[in-house]
Length: 116
Image (cartoon, rainbow, N blue to C red; front, top):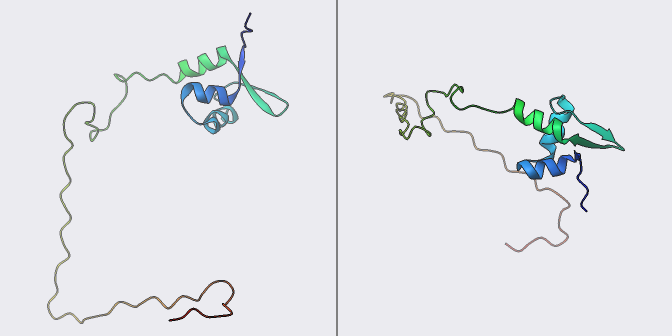
């Protein structure tokens, strides 16, 4: 006869939900997910996990979707116009951009330099 466990580890919960165990531990440390700590490891009761998931349910009809989010509506998003190119000034002096200085080699110098 199999023993039914009442408490789950963060790794088991993460595998069940398809997220990282670090996320589960973060919820525990923030106090959003109720847990007990035994010998340095957390355990979450099944009822507490169910209550946590119930509290984080999302109803898409009540969600405020941003205006730009048309993925669920099947409407392609409007493309933003390209920025205008900077104006060309006639008679402006030609200024060269400074070059980066040569980098110093890192590490020990070679006993025998590489052939050029």
